[in-house]
Length: 531
Image 1 (cartoon, rainbow, N blue to C red):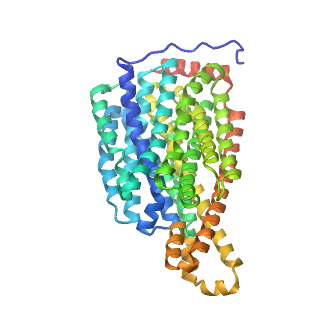
Image 2 (image 1 turned 60 degrees about the vertical axis):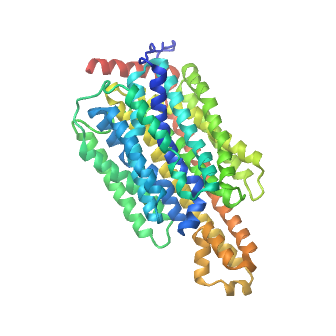
Image 3 (image 1 turned 180 degrees about the horizontal axis):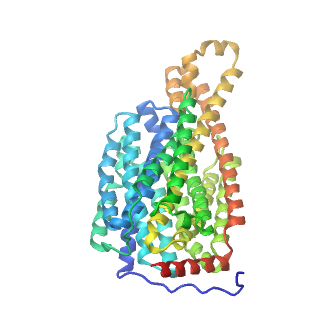
């Protein structure tokens, strides 16, 4: 039976030159975050330059997080076994040529491939930063370090859209993918000079088969969701989702029986771990989904240029940074459960504002309020979602925890961007179809099958068509704007629904404050007994 007396927090420990080491790790994570976000602001330009469909843009937007999510568990385990600093350095270095490959891509397919490679590099670097924080810090100092890591990394991600927007005002879209390169060079130097080569690593064998199964499971899941939005590709989508179901079953079957599992179900079944994992997937995924849809809405519907669209996200980044210290204090005072629930409520308020406040004539104030609410919600929920994972496993398994923490962002981002992107694309096409059906008979007679297909392809295609038919330009653009808004509203409604699911799971299944601390103490005792 749980005790009602307050449970004392463990003492804080930190490495030498803690501030500099944390700076190096935050910068390493920030580079991955920046590379993840830069594509969103340039999507309209990319669509026009490469003639991409809305589904093609979805794949580009999700490619980086797909590469990251599909490999992160496996690479986290490799870092635990062979050296986290080595894995971090390799990821930062590989990310540089991947960025140049994106910048020079001549087709939407090549761009998607380069983003996938960049995501693989980030899968080596990003989770390793959280693993090193967990290994080098403990107690409340670890909570504060994770809060800064989470908030500043997310803020770098959001602010990178501003830099990308400014670059796109004067240079072609490819240059936006090079924004993180200077930061990567600095991060490589700092990590090389400051981060310990080895700390609390394991000698356990790595489950290579489990790593392959996890990559196929996650990759086919995300691609299957994206293919649902493609005309005539339902069979491929069903095949991929079927493959995901089979490999997912095999992965968990393997993890249950392997002597040294990649994803230890014994730890994953702990309530603070699995609820935090699910909650993080929803919260971080919703942030990325909101930015993905929102950036296109601001440019396509409201007519913002790339710099203005990037500037609109800055309040979200500021809200994350401002809220993060309060989040760590709330965890110490009220526990992770209450802090997570606050984050869900604030995020959902952001989606509600988007659904009812965003239209063809939305003022900038409503846009800012929406982004502030989304950013603040993630700021509240991000720290407890990461903190609960790392405190639920022994230090030799922090690669699993950090990999899961990365999955929160990247699997969540992949799924939510794919889901909201598919909903957006379907909603847009359906709305355009209704507009064509409602047009006068004389107008319908002039709309050939190919013209109708072009209108439904994407907003950028509708713009190109409007340029070809100047007499109908205004009508085409207005119909496309309203149709995009209708599709976006479908996406915002889905975001609200997903938030409600997260709130219900957290409310009923995450332990309350004292029980949470009792569990962490029990886990620490079990770990010290075993090791």
